[in-house]
Image (cartoon, rainbow, N blue to C red; front, top):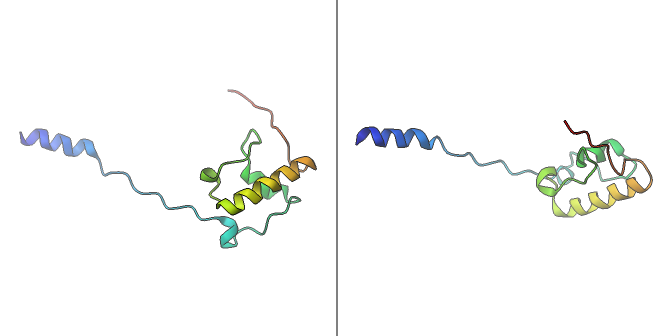
Amino acid sequence: MPREQQRDKRRRGGGRRGRRPKVCAFCTGEHEIMDYHDGKMLRRYISDTAKILPRRRSGVCAKHQRRLATTIKRARMLAIIPITEKLVRK
């Protein structure tokens, strides 16, 4: 009986640690206010297939996510950042 209890304790593990909540880089002042001319900054928020990253991946608040999406779309229209990227499959 005691051995079975010891096995159960070993299997459980230490548990899952909670994640630290992401803080919006625009709210903290880490990034400047969005400008569609800054292609280098905008590329951080698009995927390798040139899709706009969702909030859960980018860590941006809702207000800045909306502004970021319109800024990326504006930069695409002016050909500052690509509309699509070539998908390379391995």
